[in-house]
Length: 252
Image (cartoon, rainbow, N blue to C red; front, side, top):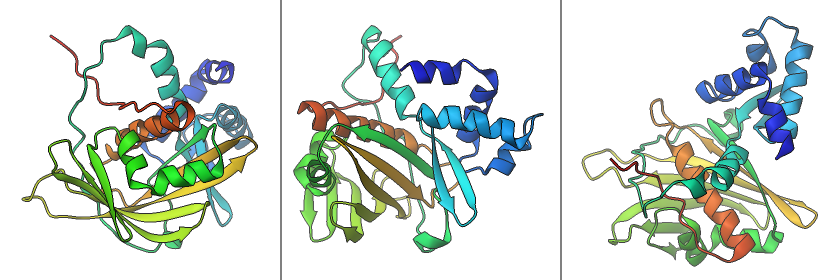
């Protein structure tokens, strides 16, 4: 927690986070062009942000791309602000349609986040691939069933809301899947994007990296859903409790 406050105390680092929120996946050169300082100076600020887990990086060839990792900020909010606010049981999910295009090795993620979870590698793998486990921590799903390589999520009123189709599995380490949102209704053309889970054991913990590809312009709200789902995953694995991190609706 101290490293987060230290990272946020500097106005340049806050500007870096604002820039990555507005335009994810920037290189060091792209970020350096926005500040009146050397690349080395910007690189030092990025190091502080990375130590605080406020950014995640994706390396492709000689280049490293930087993404805002909002999980620590969400955890801080849940700890210090959430208890002060009355939170209703649910809020409508953000409308999303996505488009599948290009092989994974030809693009970089549109959205990326990382989260440390105190659990075994086996337990995390089970939680990501088991339908009952997915239903327990997904922030809006009422149920989830597996049909072959598909995980089918339904709302509490039994309407199909999301279909994940696993395209490649590396046991205990990596899940590649398509992402088909169905909550927009039958009049909206059905499209799909894709995402990857990467599991890295870290002693008694695991580092889970999520990479989401091919999110079309104007549909970046999928990131909010991922924050809430993975917060639920962490809570479920570490405490055994089912907590639905649903949207907050302000009362008037």
